[in-house]
Length: 177
Image (tube, rainbow, N blue to C red):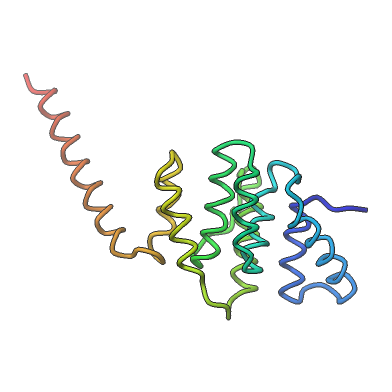
């Protein structure tokens, strides 16, 4: 029985960690390979498949999955998932079963554990981050700042602090008699 692309991604990462018997790992890898090459997966699982490609170091497949995404929001999800892995950014696993990104977060945690000895691909992650900065998805790049641009986080905090003081000052002037 074929698995969904999401299940294939989770199982593929578990196989990499050695958590599956050899015969199951072989079946999962075979299914994962077919899923990674497919540009017709279920719409909501494209990010997980792009993550599998990133784990394998196949950044061309990451870009293909991003370009095949149906909407700008889907494309953003694919790219930020791959960039998060490539930058080795810390991600908390979602414990809320209603969270939209719980499978992606689980896959990112598994991918991080399965690639603990491999170097990051910061160059590709930066390229993706710069692309996301030019879109409405720029807020999703904040997670990437600590590993890719640690100095930017402090500057961003200063900007936010300045904006808060300015907003509070304007609110105080409006409330004056």
